[in-house]
Length: 232
Ligand code: MN
Image 1 (cartoon, rainbow, N blue to C red):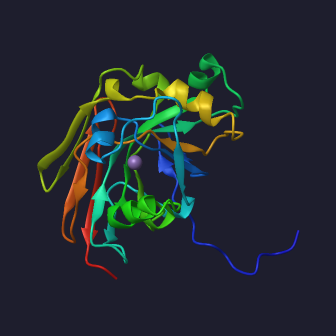
Image 2 (tube, protein in one colour):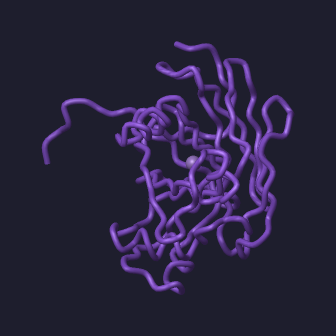
């Protein structure tokens, strides 16, 4: 074994309620347009034939409570409140039963987005990386083990900016359910511990500015918070 030329910055592990150890961030998969009302506000009809995904670089992960600079290259930086699930066992071509069994934990997450660049990329039929794979854009609150959370049903999912409620929906509105997402995604990836899946955002997305404080929650999970600071 040879030594590396240099050391990469460590990606923070995500705290887990009731555990001293943290959950390491492996890969970050995100489901697109998984709430009908959000798809409508984006001017797109929901594709009920198949889910689709984009990814975020693991180094884009930050923990709830962080203050992060307003990112470069955008004039329309948006919040997206999401349910995240954390994979806890290897799973490939999962059955529905195997899919739910592979969920280690759930948590609140933010999928921060350069909306102007995402829409420009979309219009030109280009990949969404500049819009979505933004530094510090995958925000994770502490996780709650699946057994402690229970079944994903009609829990409220909500987000506020500076205390004003912007997103308010229930997990019942998810088009592709947790087991369906894992069944589908595991046809293409050997999912494994460390893999996180953001399940999409409800309606009400909108911009934030430097100085804004984002807070969000899902019934039964630890809340999430993010503060935007001046651009660097
Ligand atoms: Mn999203």
